[in-house]
Length: 138
Image 1 (cartoon, one colour):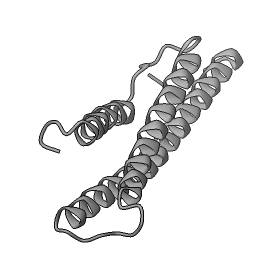
Image 2 (cartoon, one colour):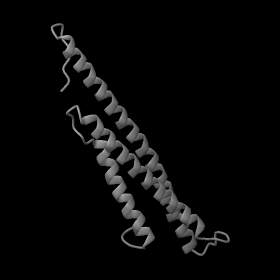
Image 3 (spheres, helix red, strand yellow):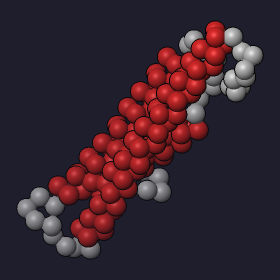
Image 4 (cartoon, one colour):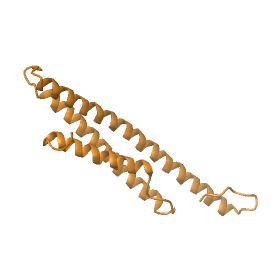
């Protein structure tokens, strides 16, 4: 826990306090970066899954979508896979950053944003596998 400096603190204690604050600011910056990646990944995943489902329904109803009717569905799946890749990559990068920061400074090495990212990656992987192999409720 970070305590507010007092007038009676020594210079060494003040420097330690300032270093703790610097680490905390860096951790919060890493959290914001992960949250930005989560938003980007959600956008790619949602657009990819929507595109896949809509175009699958259109082709099932008998509409022909050009010379390569499977191309738009593949694009939707590729966007979904790209979103999943971005999410997993950002999560790994965040985890490595937290481990480096907490090596010398005792602090929690897990974050709520990282938990959300991991769950979202799991659900996306399940949805992607369900669409590719025609399994499950997706």
